[in-house]
Every structure is written in C-alpha cells, then in structure tokens.
Length: 384
Ligand code: USQ
Image 1 (cartoon, helix red, strand yellow):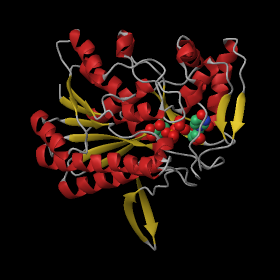
Image 2 (tube, helix red, strand yellow; image 1 turned 180 degrees about the vertical axis):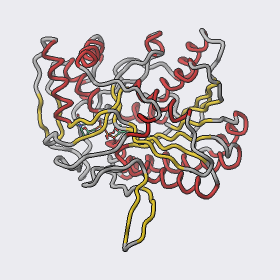
Image 3 (cartoon, helix red, strand yellow; image 1 turned 90 degrees about the vertical axis):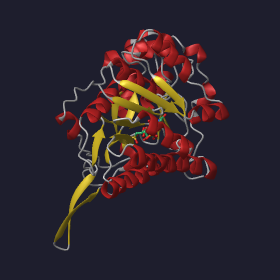
C-alpha cells in the first residue's frame, strides 16, 4: 500500500477519489483551498444535493475506518505550506485535481481569467518546485483535459506526436488549440510539467479527461452524508448532468448552437478507475506520459437523444432546444482522438446506457424541488 496525496479533495472528482483510494487500503492525505465553494457562493450557485464540508465528510468516513484519511486546508499558491506538507507526508503518488475547473467561469472577464490561470498555473508550479525539493521520486498524476487539444482537423494522439518536417523527424508535444482560458491553463500546466520532467527528472502522467457524468460511486452510496457535488448550473455543470436535470424538471434541453460538436465523455466511476490505473503504472524518472481519458465520443445531439429516449420511457415529455451558442467552438468538425493507453493497461469501461440515464433522472427527480432554475440558462458569452 502506498502513500497518496490527493489535491482538490473537496471537489466533484477529488472527494470520490479520496474515499476510493482509502477503501483500497492506501494511506490517503487530501487537501483543498475551497476556492470552488467561494465561487459558488459569490455566483449564487448551489449543487443539487447539499454537500457537507470536507472535514465533516472525512470525519464521517474515518468513523468506520481503521485506515484514517488525513486532510489539510491548503492553497497551492501558499508555497511554504505545500513544501511543508510534502516534506511531512513524503507521498509516493500525488493526484492533482486542485484547479478551477470551469471553462465558462474562466471566460467571465479579466478577473475570472486571472484567477483561473494564477490558481491553476502558479499553483501547479509551486507543486512542481515543492516536489523537486521534498519528494523528487514521487509520481504526479495530473488531471488535464481533452479540451487542451480542441478539435483539430487531424487525428488526436495521446499527448505526443511524431512529426516529419523538411526531411527530419522528431517527437514533440501534440499541438494544442484549446477553447477557453480554463482549457488554456491546463495546456500551460502540461508544458510546465513536461519541462520539469525533462529538466529535473520528475515523473508524471497527464490525464487528458473528457467531460464526466454521474452522481454516485461505490463509496458515495454508503451514506448520503458522503455525497459529492453534482452541478447542473451553467458554470460548473457538465453537459449530460445538466440535460438530465433539465429532463427531471420537464424542461427542454439547452443545446448550444447546432449540437453537432463532439466530445469525449466518461462515467465518474471510470475517472476513479483511470486514476488508479495511472497511479499503478508510474513512468520512469524524467518521463512525461499522457493518456487520453474518455470512454465514448458523442455529439451534443447524441447526448440529448440519449436523455430524450430515457425520459420518454419515464413518461416525461421533453424536447431539444437549440439556443445561440454562448461559446466560440466549431459545431461541425472532424474528431478522432486516440484512447488506447488506458485500455491497454486494463481499463474496463462503463458505457452510457439507457438504464443508467433513467436511474440518474430518477435520482435527480427526488431533489427537483431544490433546483434553482435561475442558474441553468447560460449567461457567459465567449465573445463579450
Ligand atoms: N453544451 C451544450 N449545452 C449545455 C452545456 C454544454 O450544448 O447546456 C455543450 C458545450 O457547448 C460543449 C459541450 O457541451 O460543446 C461540453 O460542455 P461541458 O460544459 O460539459 O464541458 P466543458 O466546458 O468542456 O468542461 C467540462 C469540465 C472541465 C473538463 C472538460 C473536459 O467542466 O473541467 O476539463 O469538461 S472536455 O470537455 O473534454 O474539455
């Protein structure tokens, strides 16, 4: 069993990951700066179901465990604190989710853009310096995003590409064309991490993840007090979770633009599996590995059709509604990203099936009186 430090343990994915690794028997330490909660508070956003504080959830989890989770309140921008934590814990693996995760938030204006890039890029740099000093052999498992690549008119490789130019060949980082200041922040992170692997001999796996859907994992289902944050709002809600909530409310599904834009997606339970696989397969010192972390590709119309199908079987009479796209993104494009690395290492993926969608609609329906309809319609425009 190993020592694992999870950064961003209060988040949608960070909290289920924290419990998952604890259940596997690892020594788990987790930290967060609670900046997402602050943005939620300032923007009047609440998740669907009340989410207890991180210390409350850790205490509830620890009550029934011999293997206790340890948590810290820590901002990665506080370099002294992260240096100290790495010196004290000496983790073998660091799983890094501690970033502002919303593309729309990052496009709200100068301050939100600066916050996103400072929090994400500088926080990640502090971590890299702290690793160099206090745990240079640790494996950094970093959550990146498929949105780093954008939608190029060529196949998307897993992080690296062989190119031939004027008769000479080289292997270089895959060229990126991200679609928001948030996605850009992850591009900067990838470059900084690769540089530190090459220069200082650190090791890292960058997981370029698609959008995640779902509400429950094996551990959150143990006790509703252990649930994670399910967002349906236009800032933090990912598209399938939003559509399911709209269906539960009997509202039409908000398709941005034509809805032909394609994205990679995965079940929240597969996020945990992928992160575990990555943790179990550290690269050699000095190496920067990249895995594309999604299980299926859908156009937005296809996702909406899945939700419509499930909803009609539940006698919900809803429809799709194309609304002007608030984002600047291609709506008709080639999309062929590779995702062989995690499959070759044993990923057994969940597929998005009708039963799953019906189940999710039912769960959301039990909380539908708590939904705030004012935070669903998008009001952040890329062009503003
Ligand atoms: N979309 C709609 N209607 C909606 C919401 C979204 O048509 O009501 C469309 C968007 O235009 C976009 C697609 O759905 O084309 C995905 O949007 P999203 O909000 O689900 O995902 P995104 O903003 O890209 O960000 C989310 C997470 C982010 C993660 C990323 C992975 O918030 O943290 O990095 O998914 S990826 O999508 O691969 O970039």
